Length: 217
Image (cartoon, rainbow, N blue to C red; front, side, top):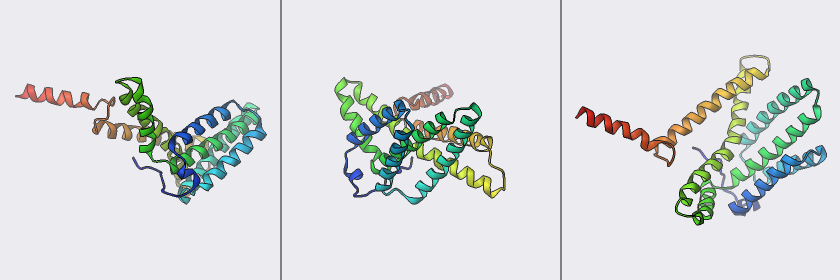
């Protein structure tokens, strides 16, 4: 799995993984419970500014912008059909803020730092704490990693649509995006299984081969 981390000397780079994840969690909860459009607009602008201060790669920012543009159009269109523009605007501001914050954390934090943080904290829970920490650390790293990845997929699909001269439509974006997402999930699962990562079933795959060999012998 390719990490989006980019080395740097910004204040966000120097901030340890613990405080960054804690602030990201708090911000996520706050954005979820807030329904004031003005506050959400300010939060989205502040999150975008924070992401800019982390100096992310230009191609990543462009990919996210295109992905967010399509999400915005689809959500606002559905909200208009349902007669609730306000809910659509609230959702868009939340997504922009959360994606910007998650990307800022991703490009300034090593995946290994996130896993180490969880391992240190959960190792105090008992013998099974370290194994639980490995799984939880991987899950969090995958979530943070693939939020911008999905947006990049959406941008690539939009570019392909334009190259073919096709009209914009939600099915032409969402259905291929779903297929790509499922294929990516399968590829990651196969990679983890091939490496025998705990809980992925790697040992279970090896066992039938051994049994077949014994039978043939």
